[in-house]
Length: 364
Image (tube, rainbow, N blue to C red; front, side):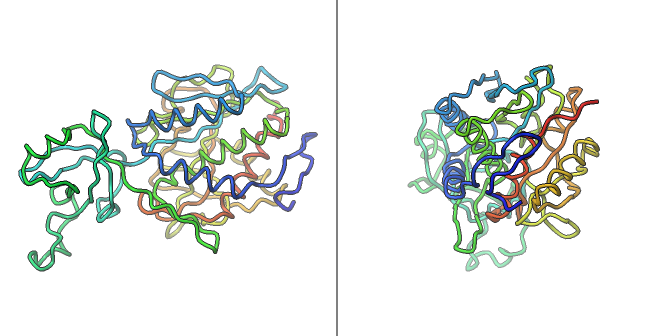
C-alpha cells in the first residue's frame, strides 16, 4: 500500500493519512518538557490531559505511569503497547568550592555527549536556574591538555549563569544536592525531513502512540482485541513497564528506538524491528508477525539486533510476566546523544503500529 491510503486489513479499515504536521508538533512539545527519570510529573500530567481530551479511560500507577485502555471485540485476550516519556538527565552530586556543580548521571550516556550543552537545574522550590555543562579544564589558554583529558564525573561540571563563587552563594539560590538537571533538547526540523533533538528516545514513539490513540478515537475504529497503551516513566533506569500489566495481556509490544551504527541494519528511514537485544531474543512468532504485516502492507522495515540495549518489554519478562514480547520503533541516529531521525521512519513506524493493532490476534 501507499501509506496514507485507507486499506482493508482483516476486515478492518486502516484510518486516514499519517498526520505529519501534528505528529511533529506534538513531538516538539514532548521533548521540550523536561523529564529525566525521577522527575516526570509535568510530562505525565501533560499525557493525562491529552488522554482526557480524547475521552480515553486511563489509570495512574503508584510509580506515576499511565495505562489507557481501548476495549476491543475480543475482551478475553489483551494487547499492551508501551512507550516511555522519561529521558536521560542528571542530579546535583556536589556543590563545589567554586560554586559550580558536580553531577551524577541519570540513565546511561557518555559525558562527552552533553559537554557544552545548556541545562536547567530544577530546585526543590520549583525555581529553574540556567547553566552550561563543561569540562572544568575547558579554557585552552590555561589548560594545555584540555582536549585530551578524560570526560568523566571528576572533570565535568555545571557553570551556573548566576553570580556565584562559593558554595554558600550557590545554596542561597536554592540549589542543593539531589536537584534534577535537564538537558536542552535543541529541537529542529529540516527541510529535508530530518528531526534533530535530544530525547527522541523515546518521545518519538510516545508521540506515535498518542497519535494512534487519537486516530482510533477520531475514526471510530473498533479494535479486534482490547488494547492497553502504557506510558511509562522509568524506562531509562530499568523498570518503567515491569508492573501493573493487566492479567489478560497476551502480547506486550515496546515501541522504542532502533539502534543505528556499524554492523546495524536499522536506518533513519524505516521502522526497525528488533529480533534480539542484550536481554536475549524477543518472542519469535510475534516478531515474525510484525515482519509479515510490514511485508503485506508495503511498510519499509529493517530487522535488527541491538547489542547494548534493553526495553520495557524485556523488563516485563525479567519481572516474571507470562507474555509474548516484541520491540519495534523508528530508527534513531546517535542514541543517547544529540539524536536524529527522519519523517519517513516516523511514517513507517506509525503504519506498522496501526497495522498491528487492527490485525486480529493469532489463535492457537
